[in-house]
Length: 460
Image 1 (cartoon, rainbow, N blue to C red):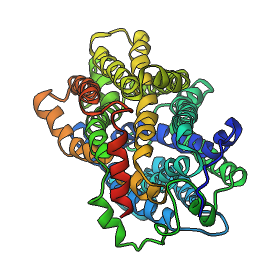
Image 2: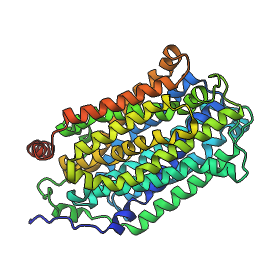
Image 3: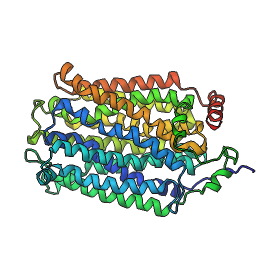
Image 4: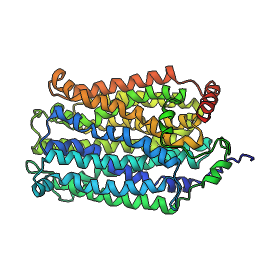
């Protein structure tokens, strides 16, 4: 059978198929900016925070490869990836409603409030992973490879918009007169209502993508380049384990870079509220219920919104920069900016100037969400797109798990519960990721043979 080349998609089609990511990242932004605050409001100590945050990477470790494998071998009336968008969105919306209401649920069923919060957080994280992984694979499914960087860049723009809204929502609601102060053992109203709004937007954006995007059928996939009938078959679930032994060489090298990048991001997400409270607001580590602590929580949300906001214009620059100087050089530059941004938070004492730190982090975040995947899709055959995207997620969640296990005790033992020092460690890790990108990742031209060998290995 003569192979066909996937047609180019219009900008409107690319936006439509990624619109659901806006809602997913809005939920993610709400979680990143407020989960530590919620947990501390409910009684968690600073050294416990990273342990509670383990829920997210552990669920990702389990869920994403499974969803990727199932998506590769699913076809129904909704399509290949879209059923998982919908299931994940519904469950995540429920988790968004339940998480900030853990204290109220505790009163009704007489359970441990922190345990309930962790259960609701796990539900939310697992659901986000169910919905998120298919969106990465969908870019590989729908776009010809030369449009890959554009596809992931569009996703990054929508991710940025969603995260900005999610990060700023509690502060916006405070300005509208909704209280940002919580009674001991409860969560502030501005956070609760922000989570409700996020649940609604998540459902609407996912439904929009489902309605406006038509996936290619299994027959059409067979006709496209890198596919033929001899290689195309429905994989057994057990095949997913053999795929681990066939990880492309490029994925292994990118995985090392991802390890240090996501170690740094996890450090920022978990410890920024406490770092600001102690380093900039002069609070003791035990002061987690005062007005000043909640101001630090609101500031964290705003800062996270700022780095997502800066990621939007940089996402537009990724494709021309990659064409001009190369993908790896673009990624290394962005990671360097992000690392310096994190480190600078220690030295900028005026909270009104911390937005400058977020510029570099915005550059790094835009690139982390796009460039590794744009480099990786060249090394993955079409029929394995979902499962290998899921396996690639291991290099994201494993550093978070390691950080989650040891980050809290390190902050407690070596930094005297003053978390800003550990945030600087995260910045150093991101600078190291930039250096490793230049060392380990070959240029696109010299990597062609290696990519071809990887694809042959996976096919056979």
